Length: 217
Image 1 (cartoon, rainbow, N blue to C red):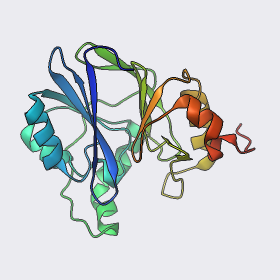
Image 2: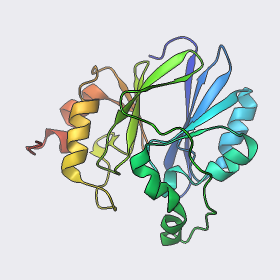
Image 3: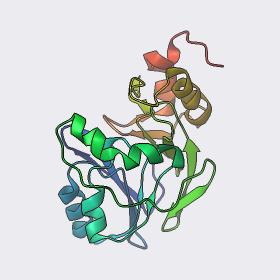
Image 4: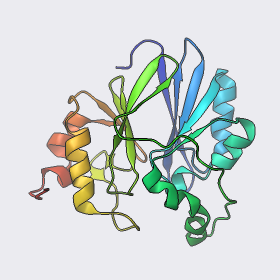
């Protein structure tokens, strides 16, 4: 259960069925957008409808389905883009990623603040810890706090992120999940980059990728 004043809106979108999130402090009416994907008009309309002021763009990682909406969002809101530096190369080559799927993408605006493991980011009065969770991509992060984990494509309901893309590594991803996500309370709600919400406890007990006998150093 979210604390009073914190609201998180899930916006599934696009051909990749990616989950974009608006995270807001409803008392200050400040918001951040997490992973703006393929349908930025939807995200911007939701911000306008709720009369929230956008303060930043937080990226869990830089795969194309999580960054397609950045140019349109930045055209309306001149806010900083927060990205882990180990995904900077992916971000700077997003136009090439887009070509694989027959999508045209102009060069993305330069990211600002480089995210670091263990630092704190905030929206209004609510703080979240940045946890580096590589494996799906080198610079993948999860935003953890207030009883939730915005896990990007690290951990899904009943699954984990794919590791067959450039920079992916299965052992690294499993280690990230075990050390950075499964150490959270079982009640922690996991808000993934794709698919439905789940909890740490449910995934610990039922996720076949986590219950399998796979050794992680």
